[in-house]
Every structure is written in C-alpha cells, then in structure tokens.
Image (cartoon, rainbow, N blue to C red; front, side, top):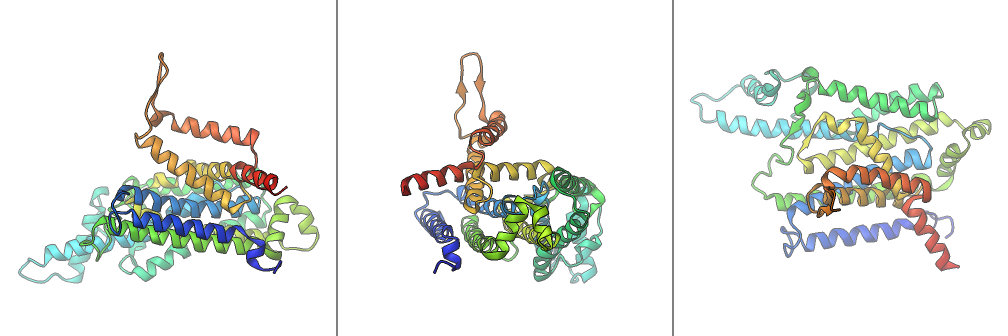
Length: 389
C-alpha cells in the first residue's frame, strides 16, 4: 500500500473531493440549474479561475519540481486560446454570412462565402482574404488537434535548442521571456493573420449553440474547466511520484550530480517543458471561450511573470500550493479590480484598489519571499505537522 500512487500523493483524493464539492455547489446555486443565487458572471469567473489553476499546476511542474523558471508559459496558454478561437470566430462568422446570403436570388458559391467571411473577420485590419494559417479554421477536430500540436511543437523546438546548449538559471528565464516577447510583438502586427491588436473576439458565441442562454453555457464550461483541472492534477501528481518524479526533483536540486550519475538531464527537462506547455495550451483553450476575447496582450511577458508570482505565493513544489496561489490571486484580482472592494479613505489620501491592486500583489510576493519562502502551502504543512506531533 505504501508504494501506490495515492499513498505517494495523498493530496489527490482531497483535491478531487474539494473540486467536486465546489463544482456541485456552483451548479446548485447557478441561474441555469439551481436557485439563481450565483450570477452567471460569477460562474464565468469561477470557470476561468479553474483554468488559471490548471496553468499554475503546469508552472509548478516546470519550476517548482524541475527548477526551470519559465517566464513564457503564458504564451502557450494564449496560443491554445488562439487555436480554438480561430474555429469559434470562423464558424460563427460563417453562420452569419450564410444566413445573410440565403436571402439572395441565387445561392452563393463556396468562394463567395469564403470571401465574405474574410471581409467580415479581417476588414477591421484592412484585409479581405482569409490567410493561409486559417486553412483549417473550418474544422473543429483539426483546430482541437492544433491546440496541442502548435504550442507543443514550439516548446519542443525551443526546449531542444536551449537544453542541448545547457542554458540554465537566469539565462534560460531570459530566453523564455524573449520568446514570449517576440511572439507577442509578432501577433500585434496586422499582417500576422490573427487580426493584430484586435485579437479574436466574440468567442463566447459558440456556433450551433446560439439559442442556448449564456447561463447554461457558462455552467457547461465550468464543468469542463473542473474536469480538465481534476485530470491535470492527477496527471501532474502521477508525473512527480515514483522514480521519474524523484529524478526531476533531483535535477532541480543538483543538476550536475544527476548528469554525473548517467541520467539524460536534457531529455527529462525537455519532456517536462513540452508537456507543461501542452497543459497550459489546453487550459487556454478552455479559458478564452469563457473570457470572450484573446489578444496579443494576453501573451505579453508580464502575464508569465504574474503566473510565477501566483505559484510562489501558493507554494512551489506543491501541486495544491500552485492551485491555492492561482485561485486566491485570481479571485482577489476580480474583487479588487471589479470595483467591489470599497475604497479606503486615509484622510489625506483615498486608496482606490483598482489602481493599487498590482502594488498589493507585488508587496504580497515580497513578503512571502522574505517570511514564507515555501508559500501558503508551506505554512499549511507546518501546521499539519504540529497537529500531528
């Protein structure tokens, strides 16, 4: 029994139970299937938060367990959103165009439909032709495959080049940040084929489900987010347990010694870097239909820095710590920046949390680094050990 997966990762059962209870309560209190006490807007916030928890798990795997401080994982998150967003926008526009052209005396040709779709989508950036990268945007199965293939291939190529050159530490972090910045700057261009600064919008309008209210669709997406998070947590727990997980953690602690013992350090790093990029992309593909829009600003390096802050606050090297950090910061951010937090009058100055939230987040990161380097999860572990003693 001591060598079983659940024995090595006891937090898995607790996490799945807590996740199931939260999902059930949200459903019971939702406007779609319950009492209506939980507005649809909050259901969407919860669904998006669950997706952010999933990418936090990916960040914890690559940084907390493998020791690679990646400042580019939000780029994979955004790419996943772009891949599914292309189908959502194309299919939705196609429905609108066909419905509009059906009133004409002669039925439209496929070429006319495609030209009209191109004008509708890319007219905002002065274009009318559908770019080559949209060749498969009409196919949901292919775009779903691209959610995994494109970010995974980018991570594989980048990781292979970086790890074979044995780039480590702060230099690797700078490289990942440079990759993210380059991708973001490219997507900002109008001729990138992805509508430049406008990004992809209207993603909340799911083709074929336009007659279903957003209250129902938001619950469905929340269920999908919870399922993806649960599977991701179990999968991450399985990766870090056993011999493989021990090698990964040993690479974090003493890479030179593990290489001396004959392990292919680069192969382990490349696997973790690539698989976490895929996890991040899947999280993004579920997140952005709930957010309704994805644009290059989502891929900017600052987003990946925030991700590292979430994991640090929650407690890196502990999967549930990453979830706690992401959930806590995401929900507090929605509260402070959404105008729900009351202003704090000091007499000589009034603190408006919309303006001061990022300062508070930065201060929290500094305090955690100085006084609780293991994060919230580390403090929880100490309490548990004291109670056990």
